[in-house]
Image 1 (tube, rainbow, N blue to C red):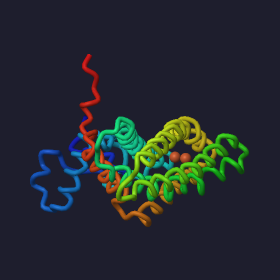
Image 2 (image 1 turned 135 degrees about the horizontal axis):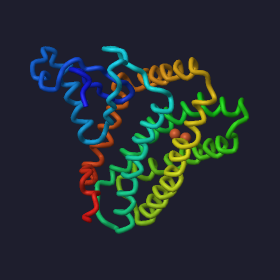
Image 3 (image 1 turned 135 degrees about the vertical axis):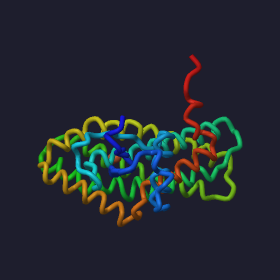
Length: 256
Ligand SMILES: [Fe+2]
Ligand SMILES: [Fe+2]
């Protein structure tokens, strides 16, 4: 569905209004812009980014910030893809199959830099204290906070073991246990945040605060990882998926 000659591409954390029809992309003089738009389309088609077609009445040509929960939920999508990488690696370890072991370290590095040191920090700095102050969902917040701490310990050990040049069978077994422990915790952790914590957060803060937090989240992310920080993380994840042979989405469609 197109709104006149406009396509609104929901790409990463913002919606960019593209004032040209797809067929006109070829004639773009600004090559950089064209490359960016094409990349956006390719990412969309491969299911990495979502397409969000919105009302033509919305502002034209200006970037629209996403809300704090939308931002965090997209980051959960990234986390989920690392959980899938961990699953694939764990199965190789359990089955004693040879595979590119550095996939574990690369995945753990994304967890540490983007999920633990940034995403969880946002939750701990901006969301958790507001629930505590309002005396809402405090038991849930306590558990989520403890899980962040536990996750960091697990990740530290995963990084330490997967950095080794050669690993013993016992170390491989330990790695498999750690990957399982991490996934066992984070699958329900992120699902609970998405379905309980984030929806409640919208009701907790005023519209104004909610909007300004969205901007602050975006600013923090750009400061830390650059303008294309999230896209870069997604690209890194895709590279690891390709390395492990789990990138092609259609392989997961059941033959029914
Ligand atoms: Fe969390
Ligand atoms: Fe989270």
